[in-house]
Length: 181
Image (cartoon, rainbow, N blue to C red):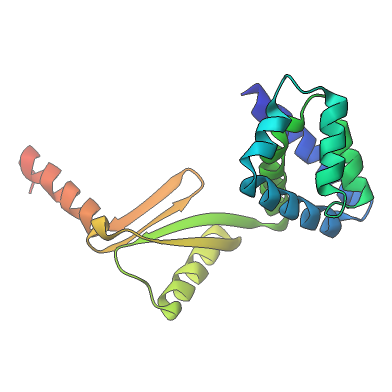
């Protein structure tokens, strides 16, 4: 829990500095590249999280790996993380940064599960309806889950809208067992 709070604080600090210093786009692009690099290198993440490697060595590693990817201001941030012994939280900080940026821009992430592949028109219509329902821009992740039998489920944050046939059958079963049908 404490690491999540710290990650959010560092992400907020970077986002605020990037907005004030007018390098938000460059910072976001650099962090996306860094995130991609970290996702492809488990060893780098392990090194950054290792308590056996001191902050100066982590600073040097971050500079060598990300000098071409990150601009000077993002490099200052990475050096600060290493100095404060938070380099191991870099993946979480980047995730929190993206969440904060999405909040700022009015974007929500939505997971849509469907029993069959939705046509482009159906997917676009569903995304538009979700956008009008939430009042925000929707970034949809479409997944195919045949176990739903039919229909769709939509997850927006902690809210799940279940319009699947499987769910309807479960509700009907409960009603039958309770003798309320």
